[in-house]
Length: 451
Figure 1: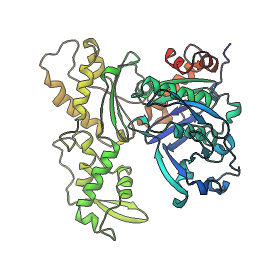
Figure 2: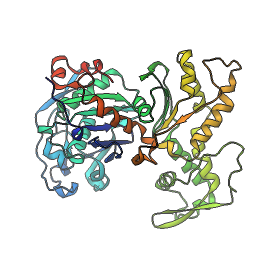
Figure 3: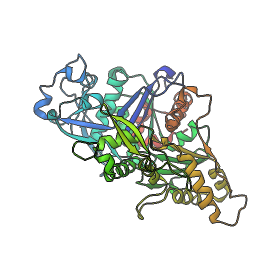
Figure 4: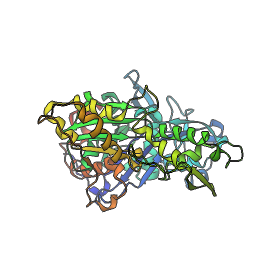
C-alpha cells in the first residue's frame, strides 16, 4: 500500500536553463517559490577542495568523503553508468561532491557559494542546462541534492517528501527516465511526478487548451496544448530570447557614443546591459507609435553611479523578440501561425483564443500588446476564408486575479500550475510513481502515470 503524503511536505522543482525554482509546502498556493537559484555549477580545483573550510559556504558543517556509487543513464548512449552519490552532510554544507567513477571526481559548488567563491578556487563552471537540455547529468544530480538538502533543508536519509518536477517540453523520454533515476536513487524521493512546463503554465492560467509562448533565456518555445495534452509534433522554437535581447542591447549601447563616453575606458560592460535589461526601462512599442525623442534619455543607476541611456536604444533592443534583425531568425508570429496550423482544424479557434505568454522575457512592457497587434494585422488576415475553425481575434490569458500572492509574477504561471497539480495529483496514487513501482519496473515506469 502506498503511503499518502501531506501537502506540507510536497516539493515542487522547476528546472530551467538559466534559473531553477523550488518550494516545499503547497498548502497555500498564493505563496511564491522560496528557492531561486542559477542553473550553474562551479567545479572546485582539486587542491582547493580538500582545504575548503565550512565558512566558504556559510555553514558550520564539515565536508566529508563520498558515499558509494549508484547508477545513472548516459543520454548519449542510453546505457547505465556508475555515478557516485555525494554525501548528504557535504551537500548541506553547500558543496556536493560527485564523480563518474571515484572520489577523485569533481567537487561542485552552487548558488551564492559559487557567486561568492574566490575565482582562484574555481577550476571551471558548468551550465547544467542549455536550450532546455541537460549538459551534465552528474552536475544535475549534485544540483538537485544541493537544492533538497541545503535550500529546502530536507534530510536525504529520511526523505518523506513527494516531488513534482516541472521540465522543459523538449525533453525526450530517456531524459525523463534519467531524472526519475536521480530522484529515486540520489535524493531518495518516495514518490515523484514529472510534467511539462507548457501544460503547467496553461493550468496556472486556468486553462486546458491554448498556445503557450515560453520566452526563456536561451530559447523561445511555442507549444500547443489541446485538452490537457501537449501536441509535441507541432512545437516550434527560436533562439531569439532573453540572451539575444542582452546581446542586442549591449551592441546598441556600445554603438551610442554618448553612452560610451560615460565609462572610463569608453567601453560599455556587459553587466551594465544585463542590469539595464532587467530594470524595466526597456519597452516594446506598437508599430506607428511615435517613439520617445531619441534625444531624450533615461537615467539609470549602476554600480553606485548614474548613467543616461537613449530612449531609442531602450525601445529597439527588446523589439527583436517580435521582429528579429537577422533574416535567418524566425519571426515569432510566424512560429505561432505554424504551430496552430499543425493542430487539428476544429481546435484552431480555441488555440487562437487562448494564448499564454510566460518566461523571464515575457516581462517586457508592451510585449503582449505588440504581439496581439502583429497577429491580428499580419497573421490572421493571411487567410480570406473564416469558418468555424478560424477566428479574426486573439485572446491572451494571465493568472486569475484571486491568486493575489502572484500579482506581478504572471511569467511564473508554470510554477503556480505545478503547485495546483501537486495538491491533487501527489495525493493520488493514480498519478504519481512510487519507489516500489520504480523498483519493480525501472525508470520507464515514469511514462505510465500522468495527470
